[in-house]
Image (cartoon, rainbow over all chains, first blue to last red; front, side):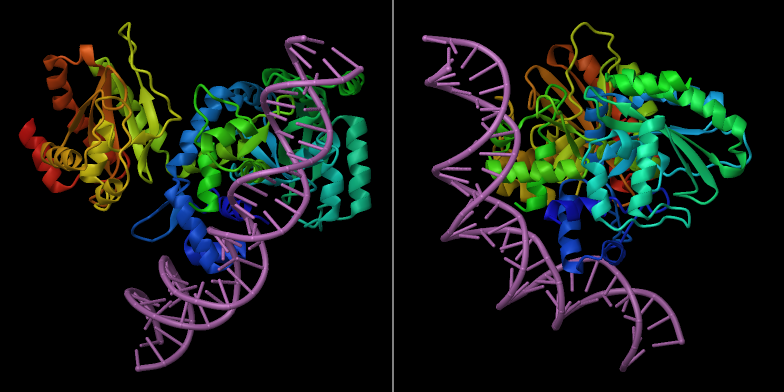
Length: 261
Length: 261
DNA sequence: AACCGATGGTTTGATATTTGAACCAGTTCG
DNA sequence: CGAACTGGTTCAAATATCAAACCATCGGTT
């Protein structure tokens, strides 16, 4: 792992529930040497990617990130473009919908919305990277994303998130093949207990998925009726998101989706 | 310059007018070796801070930045908090107002708003880092920010942005002293030709400026009347922004502002 | 087709930086 | 006091960097 990757990985330890992290905590989370972590934190701070709370000495995400995010959204306003589509689908289904983009061998949440019409709801952390083998989104990405994604992933050990996570290489291959045939992925409690989700791929201008759109609901609410409704609407939403992002759905997948409808 | 700084500095070459940058262009902009730049770009891409356009091979800002920005805004919604104050002041004055936060030895734009009531207007690039010695915001930061900021800056060569930029150490020291007495900074065409601006510091919980609020207008519109109006309103706005961000204005500066009013 | 001048990307081996175990210093708590 | 935490710093050994040369590919020109 290169220096830059080590440093940037430190930033991934922030989450909705952990906004400020100290040196020792970073060392524990990253497993790196303390001196190294410290130099990395200093350098990230000097560049505005972190800022240090003068009182607690803890580190927080810094202003540089906001500045760069503003630039990206201005040039390629993906968040703004997909937001209405996500909200519309979430409203129709009454469940949590999220769009994520591939970030290396994970998926990075871009936008999510929950209609909040039910008492129980699925918790979704925008800061958390989604693993490819444990989530419906991940399976959709493995099936329709870059072809070297699955082989690379199979070289690593598949870490279970729950007792239901697929950790067997052969089973993962078969499941991905099935997703490729169906044009939609379904996972029950693979990432979080008691949560089921569906996902379909979203494309850029190449016939290679750049992200996914997914619906997640508590498993108890995932009835045959809701499943049918999701299967009927999700491919359409994926097509709309793809078009909003200036991409095209590959013809063979378009055919699969049409036949399913 | 450390590896991480070199890599992160690459990201600063993006701007509103330059959304996609190729390897050779990065090499020219950064002055670094091509092989090094390429390795850095690859590593940034692998971590989602950049993404590569498969067609042109150029690099763009990646999804990781959005993800982290969402986390930061959720934990410390500075942008959302200051936006209404910036817009209110911009409306009252009819000119461009911006709030920036310190990012190492520069200022990083956090939010800006232009009432757009005049035909000519000041161009403001959210992606661009503001130098401390050339802008009103910078002088306010030098006067009220960390005490080691000015000495450190004086050790480097002061690069002129226009013919009016202060590049003399002695003059800069005097000017900063004056800003410290006035509680407000004024610069005429120090950063952009034909643009004048005022700035006051904004504080966190320590008696040390963390950022600034500034008004910029075409020099021809900067009449005595407008100047008086800005001097009367900017300190109040700076106080409001400080309070929104959960900080306090140091008592001695509060006295200066009160006496001026 | 052959050529040119760009581009992105890779390799090599001497050189410089990063690394990590141990070390230092300040707090907090019994 | 001393133990157990913090955050932060030092100096041989591992790793990254640099410069220059190289390869492949693209789009236009002769």
